[in-house]
Image (cartoon, rainbow, N blue to C red; front, side, top):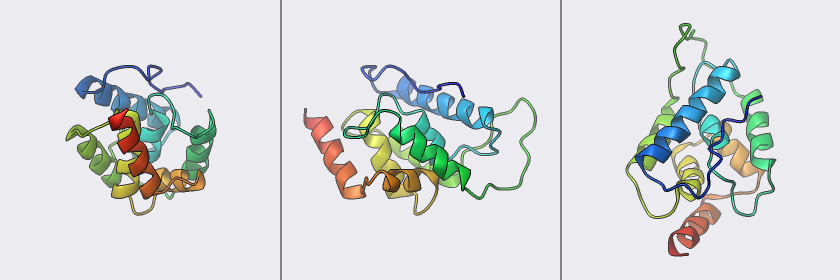
Length: 144
C-alpha cells in the first residue's frame, strides 16, 4: 500500500493541513477499495505519529479494525471519492471548528468523542488510548 500520511509533523495546522488530511484519507480509502471514508482512514492519514505509540502500531491497529468493519453496500461511481461516514464527517467538522493543540493531537480525541464504535475508535482502544488519555495529550501539546 502507498503511504498516504502527511509526512510533515512540523507543518502548521490550519485549513490546509485539514484539507491535506482529508485528501490523504480519501486516497487511502480508494486505494483499499473501500466505499466510504471512515475515522480509521483519517487516522491512517495522521500527520506524524501519536505520542507514546510505536511507529507503525497505529497503522497496524487501524488496518485490523478496517478488515473487520461492516462496510455499507452502496457502490461508488468510478472516478469519484467515497463519501465520508457519518462519524468521519463529525470528526472532520470538529477539527474544522479549530481548537487548541496540533491536528495530530486533536484527531484522536475527536475520534474517541465522536465515534461510539467503528474502525478509528477500535484501533485507538486496541492501542490502549482512552478519551481521558487523549485529552491529556491534547492539553500537553497545546501548552508545550
